[in-house]
Image: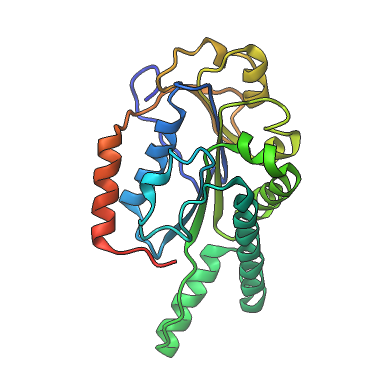
Length: 256
């Protein structure tokens, strides 16, 4: 909620991609959990698929076994660049489908498939949206920066029409982690409290995030806005996350 207490909402398909940064304990992981669980509560597994990359090994492991996952949570930084390449390949496959069917984006393609199915009585599957969540970009950049950067750049430039969205979180908002190329292609940003004004500038292109209070106090810079909004993020306890995950798993098992 913002400073006057109104709820602040944002749609992932309008954002297309999101960069989240903040020091340890600033509420970053809670925010990522909030984003994931709100997708789980709203979307069925055939509508939205997720690819989770978590080199820290503890943040996203809770979600192993949910039916929305494309693959088990990737914890090995070396395998992460392969996982991202898989998503890039999927994006290219989708663009080929679009060109064969004469559609421009995932919405157009899915409408085309619905029409074709109702006319022919066939059951061709619609394409699900894909959300790629990276919970510590710094660790990936240390192991395989060029590969990771290439994949992220390609996805952030081209993947929106294919229905693929990136959510990238990092604790170290330094220039070697959030490179200019990555920043240029990810317009929506969230900054939690950071240690210095330099870090704040790296994320938001302006100071201010170093003055935040921590614990979910954030500056949200939506795409197309010229100045960020100050928002207090919703708190989500680990118990709540586990309950939601257990509930989703009882509905349907994961198939990789």
